[in-house]
Image (cartoon, rainbow, N blue to C red; front, side):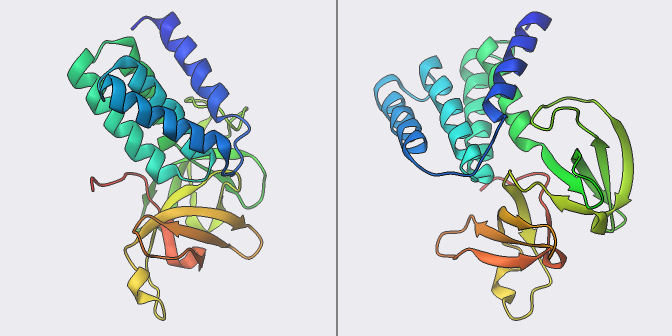
Length: 219
C-alpha cells in the first residue's frame, strides 16, 4: 500500500473516531442491519461486506462498545487477509481501523491532556504512556514515551476502555471478567463497567479493582 493511500486511510479513520460520544440509536441499528444484509447477500468476504463491517464497528465504538468493535474488526481483518491478501487496500484500511480502536487513551490526573497507554510495568504499579496527543481523537506516534504511577492516570471519559476486574471481595464472581469501562467519575475514581459476558449486569467499580486490558484474548 502506498504512503498516499495510507495517509488517506488514516484521515478516514481519524474522521470516524473524532467527536466520539456514547450513544445508542438509529445509527447503530442501521449499521448493524446493513452489515447483516451484506453478509447474507454478498458473503462475509465480499469487499462491500467488509466495508459495511468497518462502519458497524465504529458505530459500536462510538456507542461505548469497544470490545465488540475490536473483536469485529479483528474478524474482518482475518477475513480480508485470507481472501484478498495482506497488501490489499481493504486489508490495510481494516488494519488501520483496528489499530485505532485498540489504542487505550487515558488522561493524567493533573491535566486534561490525552495520552496513549502502552503497557503496565512493575506488576501494574506503573504505566508506560506516549504523548500528549495534540489532537485527542487522532492516532499516531507523536509525543514522548515515559512512565508514571498507575494511580496517576484516569480513563478517558468520552471513550469506553476495555478493562478486567480483580480484587473484588463482595462481588468476587466478577474477578477476571472483562468489560467496557464507561461513565468515568474522575474525582471519585470509579466507573461503570458493562461486561462482555451475557447475563452480567453493569456495575460501578473502583479503579482499585480493575486494570486496562491491552489485548483481547480470542473467545
